[in-house]
Length: 194
Length: 101
Image 1 (cartoon, helix red, strand yellow):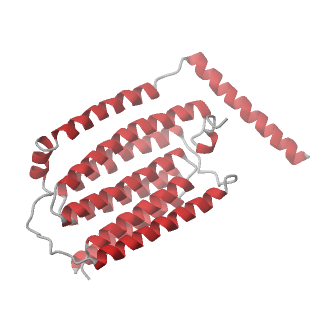
Image 2: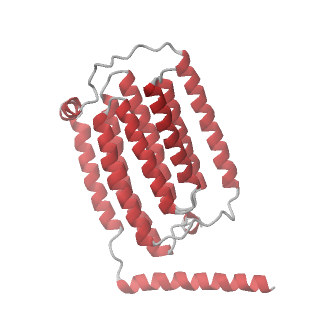
Image 3: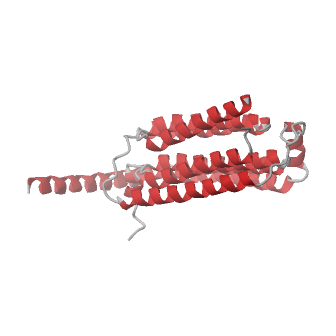
């Protein structure tokens, strides 16, 4: 019974944080909500007897990835998200997609509820670090090595992407952009005056 | 009522739905990025729940792989966002429509 209450509390917290992630316009608030989702999911992993994954969730997601995201948000000094002016049909697309996915979720919920449940063995230890480490370096050795190569590629790719442009080239780009914006504003002013 | 596999699947489905709606709804490239992370987490919960109820460690290994891919995606995706900001002075995805015409 206690485990049920804990599950509903954590699930409610995760869903509330996820909704606040979507509706907040300030990216920093969204990032903090996302940390809330990660932490409550990590607790749910603990209740599902997966302590290794729960720890890795906090370390990699709530730690490394979110720190990176917050760094980028602070670095770019972003304003709040502008309200949607054009592309209003995207609201309809988002609503339709959400309804379709929710209907699927409900269908899966009922379908799985109706199938007879086997009793799970609470003594089993598939989730502990020892068995995961053993599986990782025997049965799943090739995927783990591929992940290593992929991470190396990601490092190289990130460095190539954010490398410095030549200074004159950069200034040119910025000037062009500012000019373009200025022109657009002038046009808008004219429109208002007109 | 005990929690069963269906409850965990429902939670992960709801998280995935919220993430998918957010990807369409958000204007901000960083917001879209965070919604994608939310969707990945919803899928991870499914893997862990199945791993628990079928007593198989493969699901947890898969979650480990997904997390590695998410970390790589974070590095490259945020690099792209910074490059986008340098060129367009904004991370609004509507401003990055240069490939359209």
